[in-house]
Amino acid sequence: MSRRGGSRNRLLVEQASQGLEQMKYEIATEFGIQLGAEQASRANGSVGGEMVKRLIQFGEQSISGAAGTTSR
Image 1 (tube, rainbow, N blue to C red):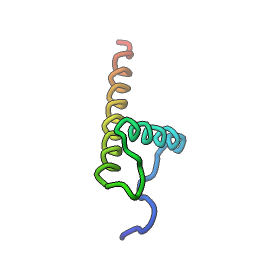
Image 2: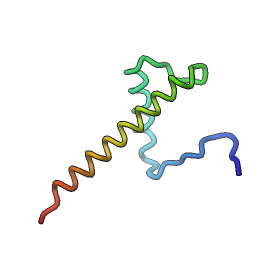
Image 3: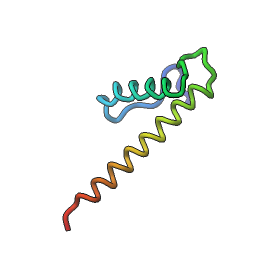
Image 4: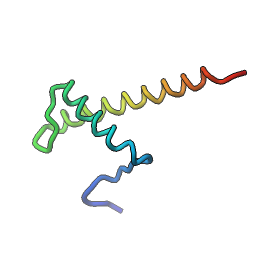
């Protein structure tokens, strides 16, 4: 079943929305990209790809940091 209009992605933590939007625009600025429908999908996609890369990195750091603080 296909959904039309809107994103099928949803946030598991609604409070993360503002932080993700901020991250998106910070990365776009770093890359010198003006986000929008008139831009090439490759440019917009590069921002999304970088967001995923950084979020994975944050998660890995969080996991490794949490693992390092457990007592034996």
